[in-house]
Image (cartoon, rainbow, N blue to C red; front, side, top):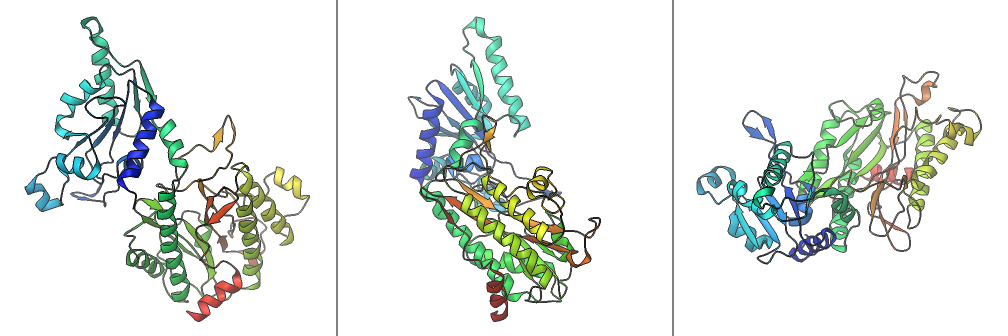
Length: 437
C-alpha cells in the first residue's frame, strides 16, 4: 500500500514544479456504463490516484501552491445514506479530509460556485485537456468569464499549461513504495502463470486457462487483471491482442499467455509460451530458443546510461539472426535489419513503460532522441516471433507458431532487477514444471 505520506510527498513535489501563484485541476475518472443501468467496476484515473489515492468517481482535485487556507482541496460527493444503501459507502467531505489529508473538501455540486474563485488571480492553470470533454468546456467557460470581466477588475489566468508534461515525468520514476507494490503484483502474476502451466492439457479451452489466471490473481489479493488476459492457443498466438479466449487447446500446439494482475492500481505484465501437451516440438523449440535468447540479451541492455531503444535493437538483431538460421530469411544480416525484413515475423517494439498503467506514461523520446534509461524506471522486455500461415512462401512446419516471452524489468543503479524472474522460461524448466504439475 502507498502511505498518506507518500501521496503528500508527490503533491508537494508537483506543486514545487508548478511554482507559486498557479493552480492544478484534475478530475477523477467517471463510472462507465456496461449495459443499460449497470456499470463496469470503477477504476480510478491513474493520475488522480497517483496524487490522492482517493477511490471514488465524481471528484475533482485542486492544488494551490501557497494558499493560506490550505493547498490541497477536494470536491467530492456528499454522504447520502439512501444512495449508500444502494451503491456503497462514500467518504464525503469529512472522510476526504480525515482519510485522504485534504485541507478543504467541498460538495461536488458546489464546484461551479467555488472553483472559479480559487482560479481567479492565479497566473497559470495546470490541466490535462482532452480527457474530460465536459469539464474541458467548464474550464474554458470560467476562464473566458474572467477575461470578459478584466475591465471590472477580474484577474484571469495568463497561461493554460498541460499538467501531464510534468506529472507524467514524475510517474516515470518509481519510488521505493511503488517498487514494493510492483514486486508483489509481479509475484502474484508469476504464481498465476506457473499455475496455468501446471493445469494445462490438450482438450481444455482457452477460457478455462483464463479462469485459472483470474482465480490465482484474486486468491492472492489482486481482485482485478491489469488488462484483458491473452490466452492464445496455436495460430491465435499470431494475433497480438487476441482476447476472445474461447477456442479448444489442441495437442501439438503452443499456448501463449500474456497476463498480469493489478495490485493497488499497479500493473504486472508477463508473457510466456509453452506446449499444450508439455513438450516442445523440434520446430517450436528452435523458434522458442531464439526468442528466449533475444529476451535475455535485451534484458542485459536495459541498464542505466543505455537509451530506451537499446533492448529493441538487441532483440531485432538476434531475432533476425534466428530467422536466417531457420532459413526463413536469406541475405546479409545488416542489410536485412536495415530493410526491416524481420517485420512480417516481429512487428512490435520490444517493450513499454509499466506502472499505474500497463502501458505507462512517460516520454520515450527527448529532443527527438531515445530517452536514456535511469534508476527507478520500469519497463517490459517482450521479444517475439509469429508465423502465420498467411505469410507467403513460409514452410508449413512453422505455421501457427506464435511465441512471446515478456518480463518486467526495474532499472537499478548498477543494472536491473527482473521482477518476473520466478516464472520459468528455459524450455527444459517449462517442460519439467508441466510434467510435475
